[in-house]
Image 1 (cartoon, rainbow, N blue to C red):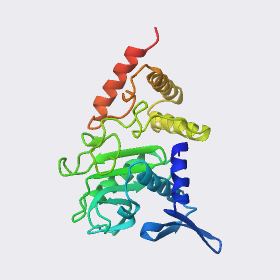
Image 2 (cartoon, one colour):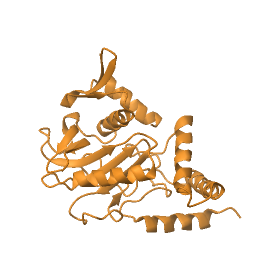
Image 3 (spheres, rainbow, N blue to C red):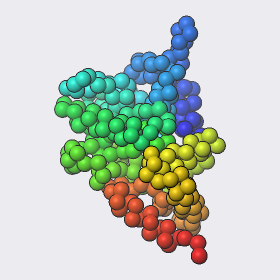
Length: 265
C-alpha cells in the first residue's frame, strides 16, 4: 500500500466511513454506510478496506453507492462480489465490480481472480460496465460492457477505473496534473515487494533462469527510471505504463521501442 493509500485509509477512519469494532478477542472492520462488518485480521480485508477508501477519496464515489459482499444473482455456486460500485444509492444498478485479493498473490491466482471478476461482472441481471482486481499494488481493470465479447481479455484493458462514472483515462499517471494521480514515493517494504513480484513474474516458474530474469528486471528498472526523469510538460502522461485499449502485444512492442531509443550508448 502506497503512502497516499494509507492516508486515504486513515482519512476514512477519521471521517467515520470505516470503524474498527472489538468483540472479545475478535476485531472487525465495519463499512458504516452499508452496515457490513468483516474480520479485520484477514489480509484480503485490509486490501478491500484500503481500496474502499480510494474509491471514496481518489475516485469520488459516494460511500452509499459502494456495496460490500454483494451476492451476485444467478451465479452457481452462489458468489459474492467484494466491492460493487452502484449508480444509485439504493444499490440496484451495478457500475463496477471489484475483486480483492491479498497482497503478493501469484500470477496464477491473480488470473483466476480476473476470471472471477468477469464472471460476476457478466452475470445475467447484473451486467457491470467495468471490473477490476486489486491485490495490493498489483491491479488490473477492464471494460466489461457489451462493447466487447464476453471472452475478451486484451482489447478491453483500461488504464484505471473511471473517476465519478466518467470515461477511463488514456493513462493512469500524469505529471503534476492533480487531481489525476502522479507517481509518488513508496515505503521500502513496498518497493521490495514490487521488485520481488516483478522478478517472480519474469522468472515464470522456470521459464527463465534466475540470472536471466534478473537481467530482464534490470532493463525494466532502467527504463522506468529514465522515463520518470525524462523532461515532460505538466499534465503529460508517463510512457512506461499501461494504456487504455492497448493489447499486451502492442504494449510490449512500445516498451521494446522505448528501450531501444533510450538504451545507453
